[in-house]
Image (cartoon, rainbow, N blue to C red; front, side):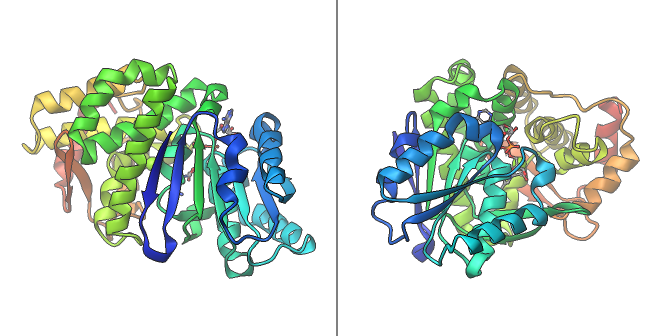
Length: 362
Ligand code: NAD
Ligand code: MG
């Protein structure tokens, strides 16, 4: 068991990480001044596996639980789904101190968090992330959102949870492909901020892939700490937080050009991290041996390292220029200068990127 305390002044909260935590949710909520009526948001996949345990835990702490299942899928992370939850919250008379509990992956967490941030201008939000990605990424940092037909996460807010409970036991029912996709973000944290952690990952990858509880506890805790540290320095994304975008410039472009269907986000980020490492070598910022380590670990994690053949360099470049995290039209990359340290490089020469994309066989 580990606790990661996220120090954000009045918006501080704890992340509890370990196996077997779901039944203990009620205990963790005892100290909070919440109304004893909670809205539990999940989906049928996760709900059928874990909602009854969570409901029992909440009931044990005196909560009346109103359960709502949104359909499973990114396409339901939209305002129409949020509206159904507002209706339910209103008819069941949830008040300003009634917690919204998100039980699921990043989709459920982002949507339930958006509802919590906006219903009555904000009600307490509890995250119970059930994918590795949600445990190391989406449940830390306070971003909540729904998608707009024209783009992902276009409508959202910065809104911190009051508590995060990451039960590692639930990862056993997760599709191994989802576990690997989550590992891509874990590896990212090592590269951007902690060379020692990267080395630890090199030594413990097999245990992680086997979902060993002790290894997972360490990896999730370190990941949350790194993300929290970066976010604390830049809570509303003005500058340094951009390093979390390592691997995402190319990754987002690959996702967009393949219609968000062929790859999990983490897989696209894996390709993007390898591309960024190669770009850094080409720009004489990174030693080849370091890029090779990055590529090797990503490959060992069962993640793709080569971009899909057949994507046109021009379309990729176009898509990168449009990325909403990129400053108007300039090609900005987060590039490693060593395993454990990255720099934000604005105005990367387009020719260097183009050469990389062409040599990647596109
Ligand atoms: P997801 O929520 O769609 O979950 C993936 C699949 O796994 C779903 O089918 C889900 O039902 C299933 N599942 C979840 N937990 C399970 C379990 N324990 N056992 C069996 N099946 C389980 O996908 P995700 O990768 O967790 O999240 C992706 C979303 O997160 C995207 O919408 C993305 O925009 C968002 N995101 C947000 C942030 C943020 O900072 N808020 C950061 C990264 C990603
Ligand atoms: Mg990501």
